[in-house]
Length: 84
Image (cartoon, rainbow, N blue to C red):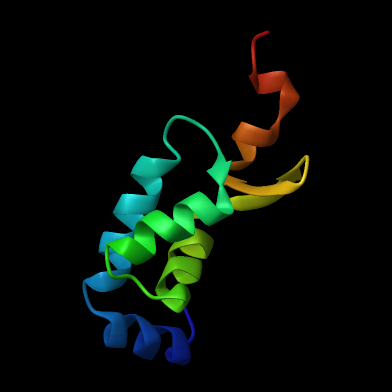
């Protein structure tokens, strides 16, 4: 971990881990539209920066499905992991 990351994490205190927990719960059942994630998390008081940091720290990926960007774990976008 870089020093600037340690400082940034310290500045966010418990906010980043809390946002990570919320976001992790939101995608636990599979990917969801990015704008839905942002709207829900912003309504809880998280900033855009904290939301993006939480997404990155969780290892979530973005994928455009149709005209909408979705966030999810890599397995959520792997066709081999779905049973149809």
